[in-house]
Image (cartoon, rainbow, N blue to C red):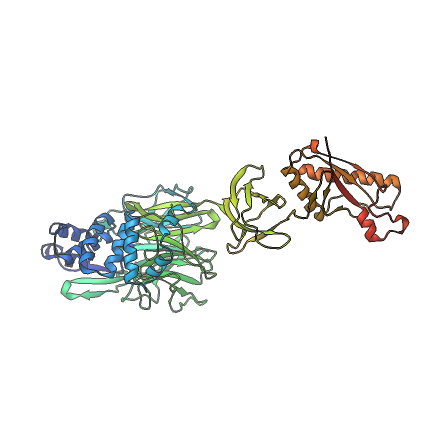
Length: 622
């Protein structure tokens, strides 16, 4: 895929083809970007014992640009050892990653970081030198499958609007071939999506295609405007290199409008230039900004991500570089902006698995770019990621199987949960608490332990509703439902009640009384907290049996109060039973107003009445 990322201009010959074949050197072929022919020529005159460093570097670059990282690695190693060049060293490291030689790549990256410490690739590596293991082990976010319309040539850059799927391909045989890889020129195709991986027979979008390269494309949400890459030759913009008998052109951006399903009135964008390339457009959902890749002046690396504002009158602002949060000294390309202002892009200048990797960054805040990990990324070139929320589908391009192919990416829907456990009495973090996560049917999902800050975090499938069972010696066992965490930097607080104030004797359990509201028998929120402590004690002492004595105040008749106290017993028993305590271990009786805690007769204050509306707990001896 490097052929689509690194190409900044196109070269056409305008002299006799047969004369060229007789006179071309490898340097001539490379200047024409005819890397396949250059490899054929250089391979005949170079071996690993050759002392011709310049030729070895030429051969390494040719293999690199045609994605043969196995051969490129060999010749980069030899040429780097001779010339100690920064770009050659990093390309060598990239080849090692692409060939899954991650330990060797890290060794070389340490040398690179030591020598070029101010390079952003170096500073990032020094912060995360274990990045490879982390990327390979991070949770899978997508299921990736190859779609049915790939050919034996290059296919990439999928874009879905309604049921129409656009992409770029070199599948049509032509007399004229692109010297870079000896494939036909790229054209834009469309197909009808039937499901995630099955599409109708593709047809070329003839009104957009020319004799040169076209694509990839992006379309506004309303379907009225398309932006696409093409060559400046289509608008007769090129420079002549007379001594080489060549014409040089640039990749440029064009736009067209939809007229009853036909794209018409194609025109170049005003910031195109003969001096630099602009390509790989992506328009935001409200058609106010176009993102693109370019090597125009003012960038950070070879190819950067830029944006340009679309004004209300249809004119364009001045292109803006997206800066070091996104761009590196390497190459960044294939931006895709989704409806939530998340930007996806491909880069070979960050810590990845090899070649181009796909990254995501939230443009709404100051977040860091995130590598999407496997299986979206591989050790090869992965690029042109697009996602469409209304269909819950995305598309990825990759040369992981040799050719550039398109793959569907179905999100593996998981929700993120994060909480901090605290001591309810002190608000201090509760460390080393055991947390069992279950589903609604109490089937275990995972078991966690809170860290020194009381933090827990986990992910589960979106269709599951998790419940937490929290255990900690000296604290009431708690079961609680938990909602997904919207902000990954925030945690909900779950206070856990201590049981330190509970005293258990041979005959009674003493703690804060269970109190009831006037003329009611429902368990209050405060009483539930106290009863949870009782349940904890009973779970810790499996032979313990409890007898409940419920009381009322002296208001009302004795008969009414006796009936009310029985209801208070039953509601207390029912709550304890709901926590899993056996019916054989809990019983009780109501005593009405016959045994007041404060014997104040008809002179009771309201506070004294409250103290008399209570339950007491006795230990039953067999």
